Image (cartoon, rainbow, N blue to C red; front, side, top):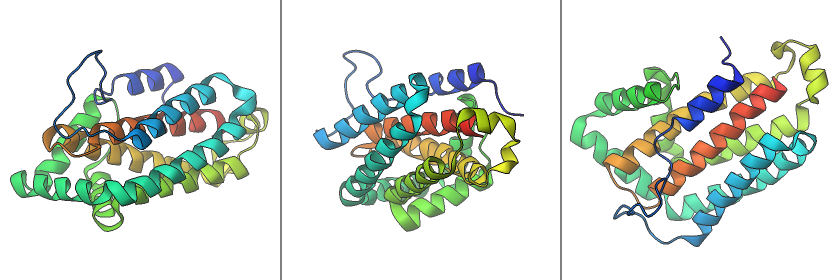
Amino acid sequence: MTPSRRQFVASIAAIPFLPDIAAGQPRSPARIADPVLDQIVTDLQNLSNEFETQPRTRKITLRALESTLSVAAAHIAVNYDAAVQVSLSRRQGRVGREAVIDDVVTRSHESRHDVSHEAVDAEMKRLEQRGLSGCFRDMQETVKRIRLQAPDQIQAAAFPASQWDYCSDLNWQIEMTECAMGIVCGIAILEPTPGGEAICGALTLVLGILMTARWWFC
């Protein structure tokens, strides 16, 4: 069943992992000064707000989102992929792979994200093989396809979601982003990782935009 918009907003708001939520909250020892990453998160927040509140310019916002995700992928590839992979490997060494997957599934379900053990395992393999930057590149490609192929809202409402091929890709990308978010946000807490909190926030914001895109275009 497709959740209502109210349920969707609640599910995003329920995610407890956004960085520095409380004013003056001490940062973790792994939080490093990175103005580029901070600006990426700020840009994603602004784009999320624009996509939500300015229906007439959604395609323009998607183009800007593509560019931001491209910058994020390049920056993460150079500065954070190795650290995230090391933290994930270290966590598996401590508790075992199945325990890591169970924890991600449990945390995701508590935040109203219905991910499966199989999907989390698949996303972990992707992170191990392609790095977190690969996840951002996949999100960029999905956003590009929506921008190029999605109809306007009136056309979308006139046909079933199955009419649009990109919707199945979007659904898959949403599931993988939910899994990546659960993994990265989890290890940011349990295995403090340089940039982990900010990247967790970035994934959360992109997930919100993707879910809004599904609401409007599928």
